Amino acid sequence: MTRSTRSHQGRQRDRNEDYGYSFKLDEVFGLVVADGLGGHNAGHVASEVAAKTFGESFQQLNSGDLDRETIQMCFEDAEDAVHRKMRENPDEFGGMGTTLVTAVIKDETALVGNAGDSRAYLINDNEINQITDDHVETEHHGMAGHRRKSSYLYNVVGGRDDEIQVDTFELNLSQDDALLLCTDGLTDELSDDRIQKVVSKADSISDASRNLVDYANRCGGSDNITVALYTLS
Image (cartoon, rainbow, N blue to C red; front, top):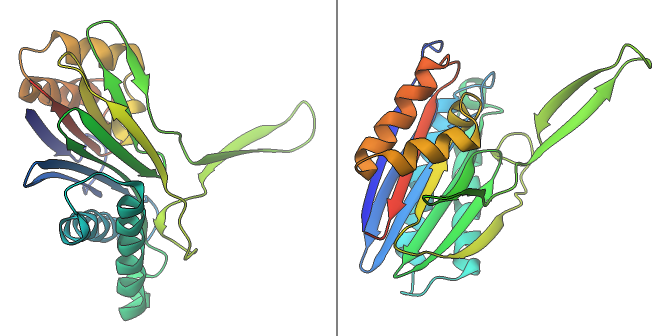
């Protein structure tokens, strides 16, 4: 197996509120990516707390098998950790939140968990498939002929709500597949087709992660950019 994680603040942000890393526990590999909510207090704290808590909880709860219940519990632990931080210092951390997308892989099976609009993709030389669903609600405002729309995240770790919806997806990986987790700093700048081409044409997973971040910055880099890639080979 090969894995690579990269994060960059982008070209238009003063601080990186994303957090991403990978871990290994016996025969299980993990990828974790979080995107602190822009405009909220301490998004960078929320993303780090949630991401690290997920990994720590998984390493405590993992029985050696991949199961959805463990992923749900790890997300709930991350949610509790963020809310606990908020209660400790509401003036500084009140309202902070983060997306969280994770993958735990054993042999040729991956179990993906998601809350928010950070994404997981399965990529090979011929196609790219988005695995996760974006937890985004779109509203339309105004009179007919003068309508505008706005979008907002309705399911995140932390924030104002204390309940979290966790989507889980089980995947079978082949030797030709690359599993990608990423924040919207990547997907807002690069189309799915462009992401597939960058990954499939790279000489290595390390080059692929570097190239994805570089291309997103070339296309504007309007947000923080975080990617985590995994292949069996």
